[in-house]
Image (cartoon, rainbow, N blue to C red; front, side, top):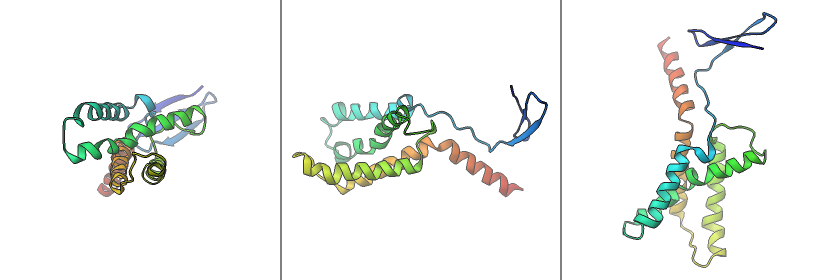
Length: 164
């Protein structure tokens, strides 16, 4: 049995049943468990995809909304279910938000699949290099959102170091 006590200097005191004391340094941020299919960005992206696909796109002649908006939602809408499935299959060992490496890997994978291989397999599909650019933009935006706590904590630690 262990008791955790939070001190004002952001250090945690762990006291074991044998009365030993161990100081652990708190690095200034808490990683919240990634909610996969319950993630807010995932849910908003799916809603926006459906709204654009069936509500906006048929009535608007804006090229971005017709050809690229939904592509921008690829990473925030498709990556959480994939990572959830990997977690259930024990291929992913953590419940942290998607890493930059995971985002980059699947951006490259889906870009090749949808823009290089897909047009050879599906008659109506066309490869568009601008779609890849939009996938990357969506991936960067999603990565910044999912990792915002780590980014802000790192920024705060660096700002605190400059004050000393």
